[in-house]
Length: 211
Length: 211
Image 1: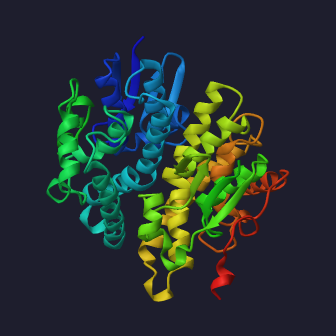
Image 2 (image 1 turned 30 degrees about the horizontal axis):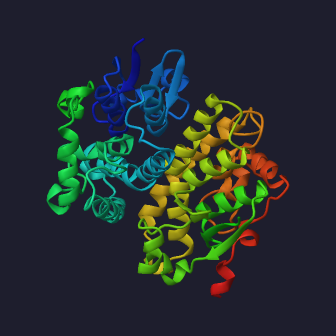
Image 3 (image 1 turned 30 degrees about the vertical axis):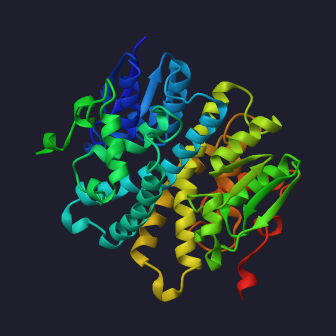
């Protein structure tokens, strides 16, 4: 059985799941979603996901949306990267929610506004507001990593994969490794895991396709 | 054993958990956090929650943060409102993530900017941007409820509690029941559950305290 992931290179939320599939050695294939030509807002895609969001994961007869659900489910079925106890599983879930609410949630929007809108359409007040929130979230994340190699417990988990995803992209959105040394070392640690690949090497589509 | 919930009346994220405690008949007591005088950003509170966020839940010897984790855990330990199958549990988790990322996440910020900042400090471009996103999220939610009484399955679950919470508050943030009839009927349905109370009746502190 081969998993299918509806995705595109620029999607940090899809990358979380693509990375999990790659690191766990799960057989999978990407299904390219032409987000920048509106495919995710079209009727055909809404049949797959009424929320109109990428990624979508097909595992056997089941379709999943929301990267946090996919990561949790993949950790269960592979027995990998889900922590080593119920307490660790709760702690992982805590970081997945925090990531969706306070971290990737801010980054995805900010990165889109800065990089994928025409310059005259960029809402500067919104960008500044989001970047201030992002800075405060980076501070929480960096503090957590000062004394730890991984977000939860003694090994990499889906909490690491969820939180790291946007931070490997080259397009600027207000994060610099120089400002956050403990985050930077943790990103190198994750990138050293067997099976790790850069988002533009793991999923189809990237900004250079659009010239 | 009595649960303790660090909370304040205006916190929609705390209300999600307070409502769960009330609806499940769990014994609990609120611990007031004086958010508007900065208590959540202070050192003492950061000892309880390094993320500096309300709510925090104490159950026996364990402390929980992130409302999504609390709701999931309370559903497990009470055996209530967690759905009736593993598929329903996945679907509930999906909506909890969506709520954090796209719904309550937007509302909490927007409501704060409009109601709890001085008029001259309100960033109008940010408010308009968030309200446009909120409208699009309301549309997803309302569509889902056209043919359903509850978000997942045939009975109320923690997905309903997470999503409904901010919508009972009287302060304006860009949501009107008149615009979303299926959301409105669902809110009445939830408010009819035994044990339901309005946030300002369930938790200490509300805007009138501050004159």
